[in-house]
Length: 511
Ligand code: GLN
Image (cartoon, rainbow, N blue to C red):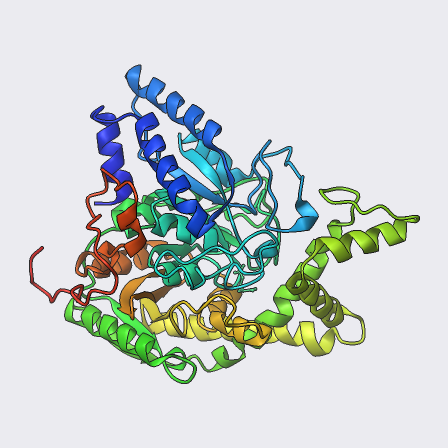
């Protein structure tokens, strides 16, 4: 059972109150925070208030939905009215949004309890959360390693039970890659399925908000809470939203699963390849038909992304000029105020992206870089469309390697390589999910499952079938042993990831 379902059952049976559950999570959050640094803001008072409101509703006999009273962490690039939203950038320090993002508004209306805003790479640019202007978040499985990024705070918070679930954003991999590094489930929805209103824009044609959870069902339940048309976002799709829980059938018989050849070859680490190959064999044993699929244009994915994303970022970040938001540096003219504010307020990676993007969009180079990149983007999308004529979902590793050490990837290019396997999915606007499929030296490895547009149900089904017949998701980071153990979630076993015991169960073997 998912953590949300377990807690919901306790709530409606009145075995525990939302206030008690919230307190439990807040206590663990603060116990672990000195080591993990997942949060930029902890909203303790608000959480208690929201929890009390849910208890009130339950006491008065009102039927509450599954998300009511569930503690959630929110990536700090989603605007929350009256609560600082920094994007982990000095340029937004002191900015307090006068409005609420659609996703957080929907979750609050569903009764969710926000425990805080999580750390990220500045403006979501990065793959390790080391680009935060304020702090480096640690990986709960090994504190000397990064949690991935850019939604590293959200992934670490869920892995360490500082929150039940979390929201992140994914422009090139920022939900799936940290989910893989932290051993949790993360989903990037189809572009346009979830509103971007109130998500601080990085690269608008790629950004999507999505859920993190410890189980596939938790992710499906949270997706249900955020998916759906929003008139405030012009790219929001007008499509019926299915009941994602109905997709959770532990069955892959008759499904065709494509293995992307290009993503299991060069550039993929040995341990990762072995774990993903074992996962593929497992899915085959469960009855899926496995096909090898060629996506020849994927080799241009990184290059294409690193033209398009910085181009859009350079336009989106022009608004931080010292006039409208946060930081303002004193200067003797307007122009030098702009310059000084931006030079002090932005960190090195953000400046690098603004420079690259401005160059790629400049009149002399537009055709050679930006326009060319858009054409290659179409080729990548075509590779996916061809694949989905033959298969239901595609699989690959989520990342080339497990989590690396803090400080290990100083060269920006080596950092960019982290997203080799996730970026094509954003370029094509498709749904992609990462879930745990093994360990190497105590560090989690992620399996990526990709669907055609709006095929979230199929992606969730394959993920669920895999999860329900394996034990990887039951492994917990060793550091949890030293904290208040969650009294509720049934899957908590306090096992160390270093144990070799969590082999996938074979077909037909019982629980
Ligand atoms: N790591 C990629 C980047 O730095 C993707 C980030 C993201 O998805 N927000 O751009």
